Image: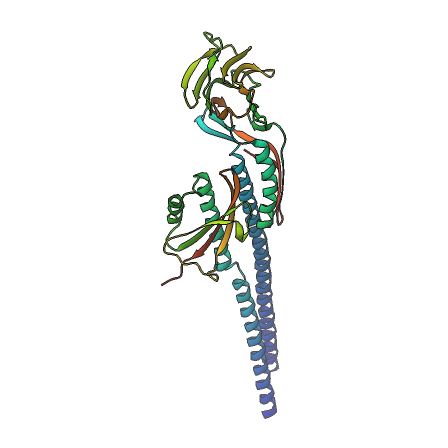
Length: 276
Length: 141
């Protein structure tokens, strides 16, 4: 009888220990789940903040595209070749745009609960990852697509120019038998023409259109110390309404504007140049 | 003998009560953990905000902010259960700066509709403007 009783005590003791162990495992599991849940919640909140930040940076970048829009399209995957295009809205007063935009963004920050600071400099620059650089003066007098790498990177350009006044006459540059291929599309209220051919890219070539007040020059070849470049100059801002330059280039992915942007939203922060 | 049995019964009952209390505690603790996962509602508001942001993004990319028909086209592509209201503000987000309001057809806006809002800035006719979109789920009829 005593042995039986002793057995029962042991049995109860083992059952209690087993139950306690089981509960301990359940508690451990629950705690682990709780900590996983906290981590999930935290990374979820971080992801939402980063997504919101990305949305705001994209929004600002899209607004900047009203001034200078850098676009690209893959042409040949194996040779990493793109059709790169830059569209410059010469009719917008860039200085006034950027100055107003800078203060407008303060309001945008207040509305969205973000802290935004935006800075710019003259000229407005868009950098590409093949070391090509597009720069546009804020006073609208010049825009230049500079190619430091030579014809191996861009051997041809299409340049489309729109003007708001009719030219009185124009002087073409000397076309050559080989070199960099240039295709000019010109439009104004009374004229439009297309002119194309090769130029010597190691010297400065000027295609000049004269207006009753001032002139517009297309510059190609050796411009501002860089060969195989292309750009425009106008003596009085206001003649040109838009300039669009297309070219087939290797690795021509637009990277960023030279405008500085700092956006903080809760714990997420972006501090760099504005992506183009 | 009787006292011994009474004591035994008392111990068994106490044991059962303790076991029940412990079981209830563990069950309720486990349920509290399950229930504290991000609920559908908390995920849903982010979804609504994303839909609003996407709609605004498309409207800006397609230059739709000035056109009722273009705005309606974007509205209609967001699905039947989604309601939207778009407001355009000139230069500042103040009541006096509000220029236009567009409501998705088939939707009724009420103040307690449970909407999520998204903002977008854009440049039009020489001015910087705000587009503010409110997105909510259509009430089941």
